[in-house]
Length: 105
Image (tube, rainbow, N blue to C red; front, side, top):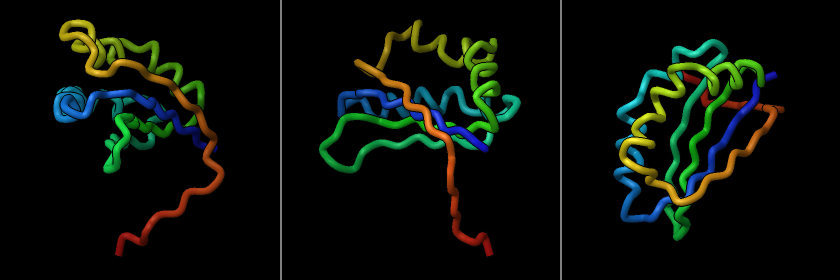
């Protein structure tokens, strides 16, 4: 059964575009990871200032392998170089019980 990791990151609204640009700059690194299934980046459309980074994995072991990989470190190097865009973050973990998607026809 798949797992979902959600990183809830507090970002000032005037930095939403910068936040999205940083993710675009490291696109593709996670999708090559063993056990990776999906990535979604969400920003709020209401008054909230918490953006969500959602990844789905085949297993917890696959996620942990990604977090300790050189590609993960490289993808997060710009955070260290340019300073964080977010002021706080919290990692949430879920097991996928159901997943329904629209028919692709």
